[in-house]
Amino acid sequence: MVLPESKDLTHLFSEETNARKPSPLKTCIHLFNDPNIIFLGGGLPMSDYFPWDNLTVDSPLPPFTKGIGAPIDPVTNDVLKADLKKNEKLHEGDIPFARALQYGFSAGQPELLKFLREHTTIIHDLQYQDWDIVATTGNTNSWESTLRVFCNRGDVILAESHSFSSSLSAAQAQGVVTFPVPIDENGIIPSKLANILDNWTPGAPKPKLLYTIPTGQNPTGSSLSDERKEEIYKIAQKHDFLIIEDEPYYFLQVGKYIKDIKERSSIESDVKPSHKEFLQSLAKTFLSLDTDGRVIRLDSFSKVLAPGSRLGWITGSKKLLAAYLALHEMTIQAPAGFTQALVSSTLNKWGQSGYIDWLICLRHEYMLKRNDAIDILFKYIPESPVFTINPPIAGMFFTVNIDASAHPEFSTKFESDPLKVEQHIYETVVKNGVLVVPGIWFITDGETTPAQPKESKESSNPNIIFFRGTYAAVSPDKLETGLKRLADVLKQEFGFN
Ligand code: PMP
Ligand code: PLP
Image (tube, rainbow, N blue to C red; front, side, top):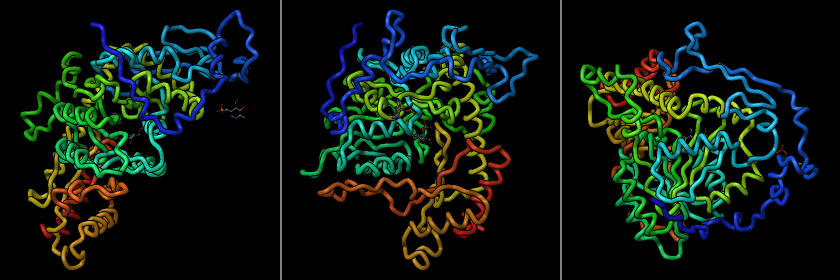
């Protein structure tokens, strides 16, 4: 089937994007590798002077039969050796250092892009033909670039009413108003989003985009259902805004929490479902719903390979990606050559199938960690309407939701202010030797001029506060000690002893 072209949405570009002229030097860089041209055009140092000749790297070998955390053991032959060279490739996925460490290929090195494009067609069901990807230094960079490509000072964007604080700060620092969209334990509530937009105050700039973290949301841990995504996409079409899906946790989809240990034992011991089962279990992405080319997807290797790799990619329509490329040529140029060479070599040697094996094994590890954390929370935190734990189905965060008005001193010491209770609990848990992060740090609190109707921001229960924790960062025994400390403070404070 021939797919249609994406729509032209370049009217959503920022003044900065419209003002950016392509760097004229970049228009001739492709001739650098033309053997018929003696290239005197750019300040490219000779690769002879790059002080690295080769690099040998060991990584685990698919299908990772011992799991992914096991140390590499060369004796049992479960090691994959890569020998990266300056001037040659020993494998088709290798990027010779002479090229990887040179200027050029701002969109990313061809070997890496080829792998990522194939990966994209395996994971997503793209609905238009002119899509592509651009390599980035991770989703922090991708989001900052997104703001600059589309937003002017004074523009408005939508974001979940609690969202990743760095992303909100990046927008606010650029003078962009972050308007909150109500969420529940399943993420954005489509009817509330529709209400906000249908009742948008005349004279206030309409939102250019929705910034969302659909899977394992940071900080709430929630995940959007496929049905909600479809509704939200239709609202985006009606009101002509873009959807930016920031998806670092997409592959950490660990499934529903089953409390009964016996009942879940077969899932816990089934380390390797088939690739087909795994792929079918993944949530449908906004990218897969996108017929217009109004979704921009931000993927990162930070949570699936390593944060310090500083490598990610953006997927979207070529018409919109061109503006990112022009920006990157003046900012990051491209992700570091070492990173691209290493990651491309490993992924291409693993192959698409080996990478899926990796993701399956990684998901299994996080499923065990999630189960462990939620078991412990249920063990120590009293069963009561005061405390709510919504076991996450993806990502690395859990939240403990608390009805602040149940605190014995709510109306006296805390003057009926839930945020005062939140601050007090935060300080008390830190004093008791565990750090969880208060929800207030993630509040999306922008307002337009003129303001939106009051109802657009009403929350269902303003006395509910929450704390975010992660099960990703520590060993199981430390997790139990930490969560017990948290529970002890909550019991003490809310009179459950
Ligand atoms: N500034 C000047 C004056 C340059 O000549 C160059 C490289 N041609 C750059 C910046 C770009 O430097 P980098 O590769 O460190 O981004
Ligand atoms: N976006 C979200 C929602 C995150 O939670 C994080 C990491 O904490 C990032 C982006 C940063 O990702 P990266 O390391 O790819 O810049």
